[in-house]
Length: 501
Image 1: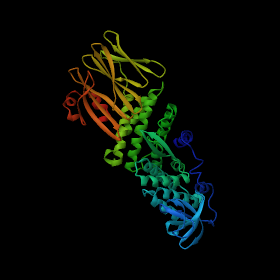
Image 2: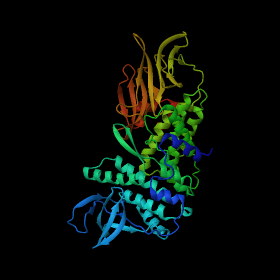
Image 3: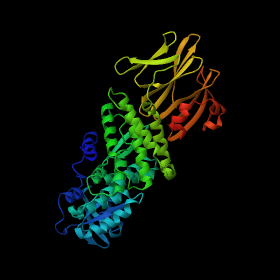
Image 4: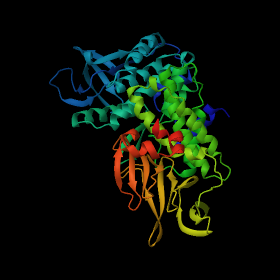
């Protein structure tokens, strides 16, 4: 099965599927089913101004029947004194509107080129998404079925996605009212938006039906790339998706991202590489939890995708995406490092605990003694274990989530061995990494590096930590700003970690 076909099958199970692109819209379903044989006798009008008043009579002072918004479709039934007598099927209201506030449509094949020209203009006009969606539906009604290609669906998906982003951002009360009205107009045309609650806020996401249609029609490489990027967004994945469904979704996203990008502009190629890096990093984590999963291969592909990014061609908007991809790849990078027998006095072994658990055993190899034990439902990376020269402490990477990696610090105390967990950050975030960067020769301090997304921003810090309390003694946003990093940073960490990009 091809990547496109498999993704279409997956979309039907993970997200609510429509029977064809915008099947709930009369315009779209008729356009795909059969070409328009002859001009229609019924005339239509599309509202082009927000807060257009539908009145009971053709006079300004007549009672208001309803408030109309850009993109609303009306049926014309007459004309009088610079007003059109119309019927609004969505609200089931009749009345009059000023002719200057609407544009008349015949919706026949001869009008299709004009509708497409307006659609091309509105596609890249922020704030006009509802109107653009209305014109997209009108074009799909007017154009003969055999003339349809990916362009109108690409425009429709682009506008629907931009409308969802606008609605997800913070707005004032006046703007919220307009957005709510535009969302109602879009919904009337069959545009599906999903609400996802994440980090104490609600985000709207377009369900991607128009982009799915792009992948089944003749399309340019740019149109295909935009569709793939829209269909593989990380922030539009339901956080409560069951683990098996999430693994299946990430596998399908990886197949879709195998799109050939040779003919694309460098900006789009960069975006595809960044998305591939994040998806393959997630697959490395998933496969590490499967008995026969190729976690190393997935991690290697993630690192290659990140390394292939042309940083000189990253736009301002893509800088954040690059930082996010780097954190995702870093979280799973230990999957690519082979595990070799340890020659250190302190070493770690893993064994199965309760169902789903992995237990970490700290062993003194010289005395053959078990020093400490701790269990976790996360993925343990034994190849990351680093003990200090005195044999009094050991650092270990543990990954409880695909995008979150902690540092476990085993240390000797007068009362015995303890295990403390050092998180990447505090607060409401699940995207971050903290990693061991070296031991200081006094045996009382260690070097650590952190990167996490906190309150929408990525923060990197390089720290000197006290071993007895894991309190931060010094920190800086660059490793060269701390003398200890010059002299004692771990060579393997310096060579492998994406945090030093």
